[in-house]
Length: 124
Image (cartoon, rainbow, N blue to C red):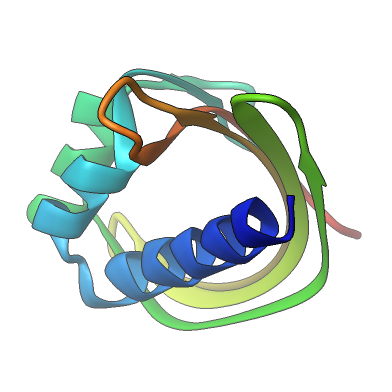
């Protein structure tokens, strides 16, 4: 279980770095084709939607600080919750907000971890 916990923490760091650098190749690897993500506006975002946001520069993230991370390891999945302070730009509008993310990571048949589900909300 400790190895899985470390693997998930490393994948969380890879996800963070990929979002910061708009690395769509890494995001493509880390996000499941079946991704269901509910954003803080209640919108459902697919993998294709997420990749498009980063690829086209619709969403740019300048700074992201994680805190209060908790990881629950299950048999072939893990649930992560993390608080994130994000400075970025969406559709040309600069903002700085604090969010709480919940992500579900699943171990694939190729023994790779991918995000299959997620949810975010703004922390007020």
